[in-house]
Image 1: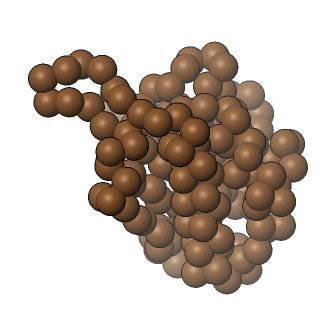
Image 2: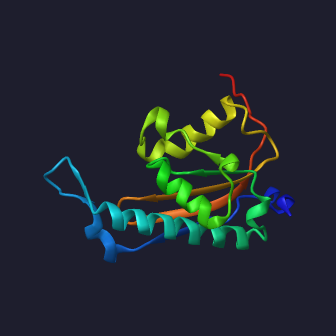
Length: 153
């Protein structure tokens, strides 16, 4: 089934809920992020799980087909809670927020690079990717990890 991922770019599931914008925002004149932590946590877990389930269904895969789950590295508790709801064991999680903190939009690429350096990521593996962020936007997708291409100038 993972072979279906080889046929071009897989579909990613994307969503947003502007009605919840007052739970996570920054004022135009302020440099501080404002959030209602418990509500953001609840929504982050729920939306990442829903999007991951949909991405798996779109790829005709199940949670058992995932070799590694790489989520936005904002908070390890959110990643662990989403994984628990999905039925993923901790051994299939790439978490490095404890080493680099929340690096915003770079967190998934950095987590992928770290997983590869740590020997957790190899060509042919099926990955679940998921994110949730400010503006109440989220997304998830399933990809097949390819051989690294080294480009020289």
